[in-house]
Length: 424
Image 1 (cartoon, helix red, strand yellow):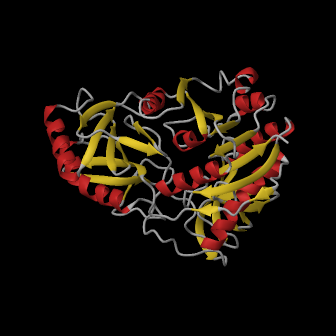
Image 2 (cartoon, helix red, strand yellow):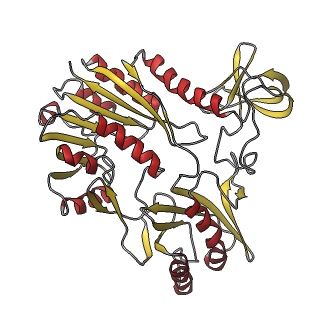
C-alpha cells in the first residue's frame, strides 16, 4: 500500500520517522519536514518501513548530499540533512540513551566532531567480470557494488590507493567471485586483507602472488593478507616491511587486520579525554580493560603501572611486544564478559579504563559497582549500552562527573562517548 506521510523526526539509526494510525513508520534518506509518498511494508518483527516513491515537498533541514554516490551507496546514512541538524541529531540521540536509563552527568561537555576525509580504514567490495573490476561499497541493503572513484570519508592517501589498486585487482582476482578488500593505514604503513577465494583451491597461486608482490612494491603497500572468508584466520601473502603502531611512548608490533580507531583524529580526541580525566596521583596502578592493541595503555603509562586486559589473541600479542620496550606494563589475555576482574582483584587499582565492544561491559561494571576503585573512565561506541553500564556504576555509588560525545563515525548513526565516574 502507498501513503502520503510527513517526517516528524530522525530516528537513532538515521531513518526519518512518520506516523500512520498511531504507529511509527521508518523511511530511509528522509529529513524532518519532508512530505513523501511511500510504499509501506511490515517487517517480520512488526515494524513498518516505507520506501519513497515521490518527494512531494522537502523539509527545511534537507540539503543536497555532498557525495555523488550517496543515493545508491550504502556506506553513509545521513548526508541529506544540514550540518547543524546533523549535529543536533547526534547529540539528541546520545541524550535519549541517557534519558532512557534515567541518568544525567554533572557536566555534559562540548561534543567533538571529527571532519570527513580522515578515515584510515575501510572494507571495499570488489567484483571481477572479464577484464573489468568493479570496486566500491555495497548499495544499501543489496549485494550490488556501487563503484566509486573517491570516498569523502577516506584519507587522501587511501583514496589514491583505491584508484591505483584496480589494475592489479583485475589481474589477480578470481572471475565472477565477490571479494572484500580491507585497507588500513597504520602510522603511514598500508596493509591490505583480501577476503574470498582467489583460485580453485582458495588461496593465491604462484602467479597471483607475483602480481600481488608487484603491486606492493609499486604502490608502497607494507603487507597483504588473505582470508578464505570473513572471520577466518588471516594468512600472510606477502610482508615487505614490519608494521608497528605508536601509542604514547609505547610502540607495538601490529598483527594483520588489528583493530584501530577509525581515524587518527578520533583516536587523539579519545586519548586526550581519557588522559585529562586521570587523577593527579603519583605512581598509580591502572587497569586498562578491553585494551585492544593499547590505544589508552600507552598514554596511561606515564601515570604509573598499567595492567592491560584483552581477549583477542592478536591484540595481546601486540601488547606483549610493547612490554619489551617500556617499563610498568603487564598484559593478560582474558574474556572479561565471561570472567570479569573480581572485586578482590580491583582492589589493586586506583583507576580503571574500559573500552568494550558494542555489547558493553555489563558484567565488569557489576563488579566495579562493588569495588573501591576511585576513578572509572568509560569509553564506548554504543551510547545505549554505555547508559546501561553507567546506571550500574551510579547505583553502586559512583558519581557521574562528566561525559563527552565524540563523533568520528561521520554521516552514520554510530557515536563514541567518554564518561568519567568517581567515588565520593
